[in-house]
Amino acid sequence: NIEKEPIIGDVLCNGMKIGNFILNEYGWKYLDLEIQGELKGEVARFKLILNRTWRPDDFFRNSDTRELGILVKRIWCED
Image: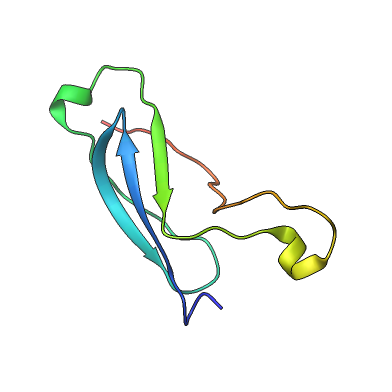
């Protein structure tokens, strides 16, 4: 239950923490994060670090034991 046990995460860009988030309700969440000056103009590699994961088999009993996190719909940059 995400309301009782929220997902807490950090967002890293090229190894540098640029933000964090808390997911405590279902649905899409919009994050607006700023990339620091020293990272601008570089190829951006993003990493999400989460406080917990889930396994489909725990809910659906389908033998899918992958450790999953969250779904990212889109990432884009603006000047």
